[in-house]
Amino acid sequence: MSIAIPSPSALNFLAGLFAGAGINMLTSVSTGPPDPEISTVKVALDSALWVIAAAFTTWAAHLFQAAEREADLYIDRDFGEAEKKQIREDHLRRALRRARLPLVLTGLSLVGAVLLLPGLISWQRVLGG
Image (cartoon, rainbow, N blue to C red):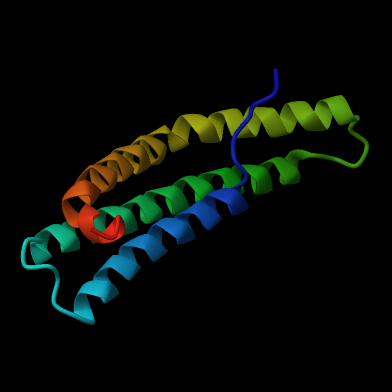
């Protein structure tokens, strides 16, 4: 049975996107006053949730990367492909168990951040009305 998890580099890329979204929200507020109907605290909270999601995603990526490095230490040149694959899967399976917490926390942070978005977006401006 093969484990299908994103690569550490893909997770780090997603973390960069999440952090960029949060930082972009903060800088957009700092360059001009927000819409009077939008609370600066709400923007800051939403921004923080995006950055926190990035931190949790980076944590998960680190766990998977460490598992890959550890598996590489156990793999010998004389091992067959099946043995190499089994060692990698064993290490990734253990990493997946450890990464459940940061992955769940990433999901919760993203859900919170996305739920705050409708209150921050002025749909009339987006739709040109």
